Image (cartoon, one colour):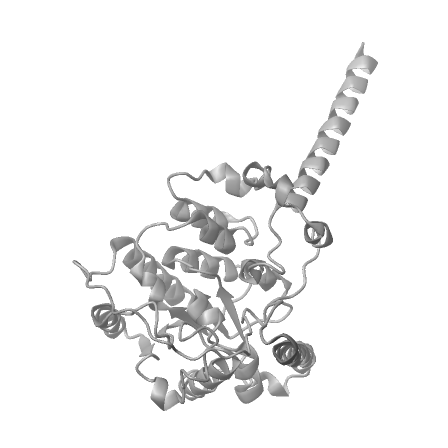
Length: 354
């Protein structure tokens, strides 16, 4: 009898293991890969591939991952930095991505882009997924899920993505097979490169709001970010990247400026400083004024980097052999992508694969 029970238990154990393996493989197959389509969705998980620490960490939405170039910061100033950015990254998502990063390293400076302060409620599952799915499982990811879910979403769908993506069968392509276990790098320490140019062509007049007060939830998580940085001995810097749209109201700007003054934080509205930086919206944007192209991102990074090295105790890692080796490869990848994009522009008249 005992032998039969043991045999049945062994068979059941093998069956469960096989089922778990099958479910894992199906989940890897069915989850979106974000390679040729919406590469921004693949950037959050790239952070975990880093082998060296960063003295500056950026968190925020497209106004950080398209407007700042960590490779430029390193080449010009020896600053090691990384952008934990994602599309429409909400303030609470920035907080939890920062909390997650602090499990691996402690930077000297954290930079948060304040555009997300305009949102006080969860917005969209699609954008939530691009910020959260790439996070490793941790209490920080659980917190991000709880804070971000819309009314229609469920916690288990994030913890076990196969529950959400089981119906993607009809959308599968060879790309889903190719990138089941390994993805191509799409960013440069979190920076999304575009070299093409599309000048500003005008925007609608800003809508008048009935209430310009930044929301309680957004302010709560800004507070939590500040307190987390204080606890870890990190300097928090607030920025508003140069962009002509979405509109950043003066009333919002004043509230952030007042908050920064109250707590002794640096706050820079680079929209207002664009002429001083040398930003030209006819040549330095690839989408008519929403985001910087490579030219604009490098200008902004040189300007911001100068301030960082003059006001914070940052190390020049260009003299460190370990970092020299790591960043030589990063610079090579950066230059190769830049050249490839210019070739695509010349051949096709547009960027088609980034």
